Image (cartoon, rainbow, N blue to C red):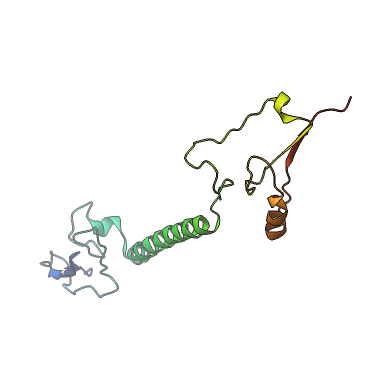
Length: 164
């Protein structure tokens, strides 16, 4: 006579028993044959006496162990990927902040714009491009110290009248 599951495990972990159908030996299934899968309310390994479509027919005993393995492995992989992504976002935001070029001039204005008439310039005008000048918008040579400290190569904007 075929062996039938006499005991099943409820998703809460409670071991339940089922009356033996006709033609079964009545031996309970072993721990390898009955597996606990969280989203299935009742589960038995071999479907002797179970109606069609029950979990026992949908998940054969050989697949039940693999399913349990995936039920553990998939959430671990998802959590690891999410943690790695969040950690990389946190570390990149700390180290790769884009700094402001303008550190102190007209910070209340959305855009700093200076305009000059060519007639007012005279023969030559030197304008700051590093935003470090004390005489901004005119250059006072502060870019030299900035270049030495940072390795940058910024210089002034020089506008002069063409010699005729």
